[in-house]
Image (tube, rainbow, N blue to C red; front, top):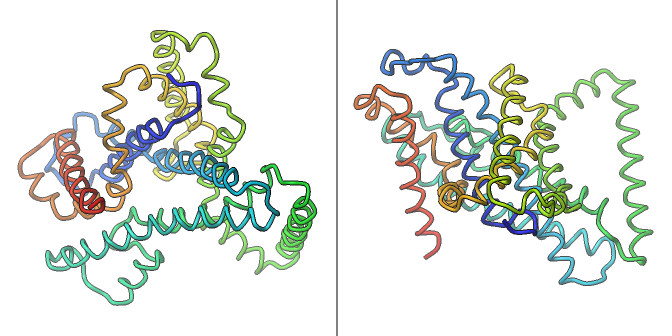
Amino acid sequence: MDQHGMTKSQSAAVQGLAILLMIYHHFFLDLKVFDERILWSNPQMVTQLAWFGKICVGLFAFVTGYGMCRVYEKRREKAGDAGFFLMMKTDYECSAKQIAKLLIRYWAVLALFLPVLFLAHRAEPDVSTILKHFFCLDYTYNGALWYAAQYVMMLLLLPVFDLMLAKIPQQGKQAQRCFYAVLGIVLIVGAIAAFVIPEFRQFSVTMIKGMRPAFFLAMFSGYLICAYSIYEKLDSLKLFHKKMPSILIGLLIVAGACIVRFFLTDSPAYATMDFLLVPFLVFGFRKITGEIPVLEKFFQGFGRISAYMWLTHLFVYSLTVDFLLQHTCSHVVFYVAEVLLDAALCLCIKKVESV
């Protein structure tokens, strides 16, 4: 196990775990859609596991925060001493690059799948709905696409958070103080207005709920753990220097985080405490997979195509569900078959992208 926090390979493994949980979450939230085409040995457990799978969003948000912290730091190191607003510009350039990378993939997948979906009569073409999809304002054709808008919002806010904690050169401190003073005044005025004006309060509450703050918190937790080298400090402890103790402690941490999450989960959309549980889950998962290379490579394989699997898995499901259910009565076999089909398609898309 390395002593330098979470590496790109480990991030990919975490994303691999997240995408497998996401697919399970989306497939088995409502077992009624399968009618009697699947025989359920323990339907309640399947549903509970599907509810638990929602933690995948927290995992993706956590990795985003952790990774972007590293990106911001490296860009600032290259830029050297710079003023506050130049550093902000650098941060937003990094965020914009990541947003553009995602949106290009997002648009490519829509352009590929929507015509197929319409030709297969799996959805009705509607110009307004199609246009809203391309601007991340609608996800009628694919319920998983809501995270695109969430990702954009998170990366637009993260630089503001980053520059609160970043080491600002002396010449930029006054600009930093002025910026956050103005921001603070705006927030205070907004809070007073929300308290005094019922309509504005209702609007504010709706807007905050629409931003899904639980996932912002998960992203911030990833950022903070990277910024303050929490994983590096834990990795340096003597009990993690040997293989078996690392695996056993990792298993205990993962089991503990999962048990608490199962206990707390009271709905399919539960995510309130994920920002506290995900850091433990990721740390324990790193300890297990870091000592078992085969397991780490397994999850890395899915992690490297996780963005495409997120974008495509419900499209693939819609087009293949009837065929696969004719040839299997086990939800596990059905799940594995869907995952492998989607992964094979995404590997092809990835190869085309890299040409």
